[in-house]
Image (cartoon, rainbow, N blue to C red; front, side, top):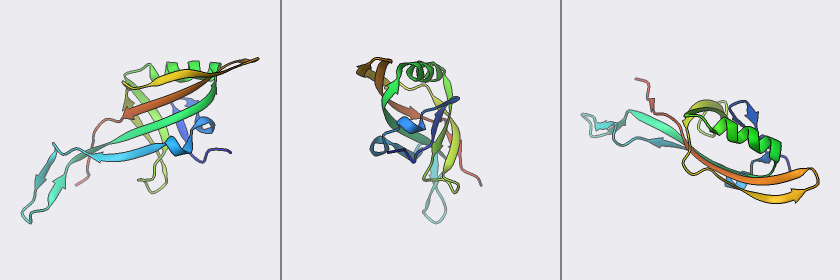
Amino acid sequence: MKSTITLIIGNVDVSEFVECENYSVKKVWNGKNSFTDINGKEVKLSWNYQLKASFENVPEKLMQEITSALDNDLISITFTDPHSENMLTTDNFQRGESTGGSVSAELDDGLRWDLSIDLTSGNHKTSA
């Protein structure tokens, strides 16, 4: 079944390998950057995205491209975003600390990999 999720890491389109049931995008408000207004309402000033995804049966050549794209301090990622009006967002994410992969199969045309990523974007300020 073709994935309905768009996920492009750097310039590497991995959309067809995304496991839909293991894809998650959260918009997380930064509690350190908030205050209570005159009416007692909490005003949040910044937020970031947390993106988690798993991929399965990724060909070895594509795995090398993904690994190279993830080997940067800031990683541009275009992703399906349920929090945006157009359902697609591009943002810069910080290098992940819990990216892991393992060989899932060895086929005649090379190895296949399973991979998971857990990344956080930089902070965004709310508009006034």
